[in-house]
Image (cartoon, rainbow, N blue to C red; front, side, top):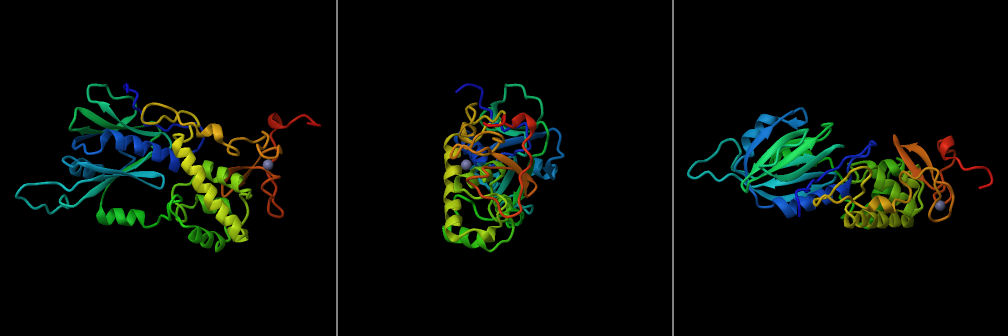
Amino acid sequence: MGLRRGLCYFVGDPSMPELPEVETVARGLRRTILGRRIVSVRLGKTDFIDDPATLEQHLPGRQIEAVERYGKFMLLRLSAMKRSGRTTANGDAAPAALLVHLGMTGRIAPNPASQPCGKHTHACFVLDDDRELRYTDARRFGRLAYLQSAALEEELRFFGADPLEISTKEFIEQTRSRRARIKGLLLDQAFLRGVGNIYADESLWRAKIHPARPGASLSREQAAVLRRVLRDTLEKAIVLGGSSISDFLDADGEPGEFQLRHRAYGREGKNCFRCGATIRRAIVAGRSSYFCPKCQPSPRGFTPLPLPRRLAKPAGK
Ligand SMILES: [Zn+2]
């Protein structure tokens, strides 16, 4: 293991890290910082941090007891403060959590304290073993928040089920009771937490379901297949370290490999791996959506975007 322990997600398009990429980062942190105590906190720019003063005040002294992924963000579970012979009135006696959302360009990784801080390092958590957990974020679309139990509960209340855990029965019922387009439903964090544009398109291609179909139009069998392939796709992507659209690196500085398995996402104008038809793009639920017009029959009246000239094949091919 060298110094390239970057846990990084950096993309050139509006994709954000989704469940597999965040899970990859969380696994790296579990391997490297679990059980360490935060000694002190240094902050740079704080416009992406909820209440930075609270974070500076309450983190030092706490131990990192668990690193959890929740949807597309992480929770670093922190121990209660041990203050001998004193009771604390400010909640320090209770366990708390640090919420870490990587936004588009956030990365969080432990570094030797002796190593100079990289550009755009905006939060530095000094650990008790001569390392620092550093958060860098060029665009600062991420978020850090120190949350005590009530605030954390409030924060998590609006999120739906984890797509790796939802039961077939619940998925079928939830999907078929909604008139929204299935692509929009998959992206709706109140329905499922953690799915974004890439894995929604990949799952719909695998399930042969057009992204613009209303949830209620799916048969029970189609909904069951979609739940199964969604889970399979996410699990395979986790095994492969996520999708490196541009420069995603895992805990050991290795890129993810799932982008090599993309079957729909980003493949406009290319041939469908299943039937050879040309993959098309449309805006569904406000997002670019890639699909095969032959394997994923569209609902009535739906037209994809015209194929850009640079992607159109010569006539007869
Ligand atoms: Zn096809």
